[in-house]
Image 1: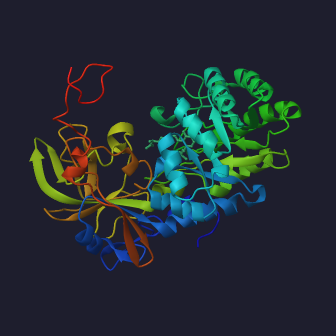
Image 2 (image 1 turned 135 degrees about the vertical axis):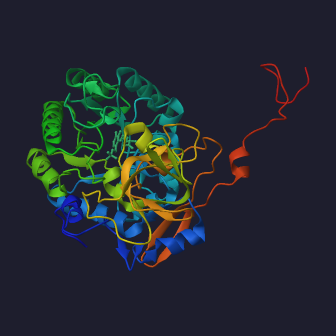
Image 3 (image 1 turned 30 degrees about the vertical axis):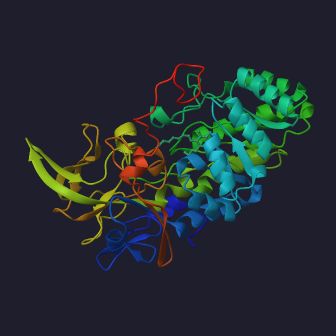
Length: 453
Ligand code: LLP
């Protein structure tokens, strides 16, 4: 295993061309010991391939970097909620950050410990609260006055206690894409610090609510430690003000958001993060909770896709591949950058460099101009049938997929050493139509299904 100093430095090691357990060897990109051209021949394209060793390494390096605080690491299931990935992380001792009843069901099925589950999100329904209280989750990250009232009512009805953390908005600018900024006053998330204090006191006074924590999450793909430092201090100060009146207040939950390497980001190392968080949290009498998603799985996945056609239009050159924005929407939605390189042949240029080659747009088959993976990207010449890897798609890729244009979702494959398992099968056309009932009988409200009126 690499040094606990953090991924960023390992990734930028001189000469390294790919991240973590993905390597070009003998002219072929491998995931751990599995050559990806051979794997694609077996499972077809497009396909997501994840490295189990990378996921495990990231979880344990995070533990090591923050060892002196012994944090509760609640992996943000939204980043990649494949059951096999959740199971793997549950076995590593991780808890989970969930945002829906669906994620709760997955985490429980995967063997996650409910006592290590935090439930985030601005719009939890009563049904979701009900299921999570019954399951015994550690705490709900409450984001508004109304939500606190509804949670209190659900807990009272169930005659069960509900753990609460108040999500505060420390009003810091994480300097990331505006769609993934959450900690500024004008974002829909959390409550400001003054409201947060009042809300926390209301939770303490409620007979069925137990104030267990103060939480904040300022954004995602943050590549500067300063906003974290500011946020952790403001959040801790509020928690310490409340503590004398809140006997069960035990957790300081700093959310996720740790940036990873997609291109040439100067992403801080884990040690850099630990250096600013540790002094603020150590000896304050609260246990640190972390909700990393991307950091654990982002660099642990590639998407394999085949070249369908090359074409030129005006001055632009297009490489049309068999994956589309329905499979990976990050470039279209956030202008997200993903390294792209042929699976066989010359290895890619060292990390942080684009190399030279003809500038092309790598696009998918979906009928939208926004269906692209790269614009003006230097790429070696590729021809029909060539296999291409789109890198760093372990987070927010498969989970954000859709069936748009009636395209079946790709399979997800987990590699461990020299073996692989298809942990989600490719969808079929029948799968996509399974819930549709074109012959359903029309009925009036108030009559039972199919009854004639
Ligand atoms: N905790 C909370 C409350 C969150 O809202 C999020 C992410 C996380 C933890 C995990 O953040 P991470 O460590 O992965 O940055 N789809 C976007 C990212 C959306 C993030 C939403 N919240 C993307 O593809 O960049």
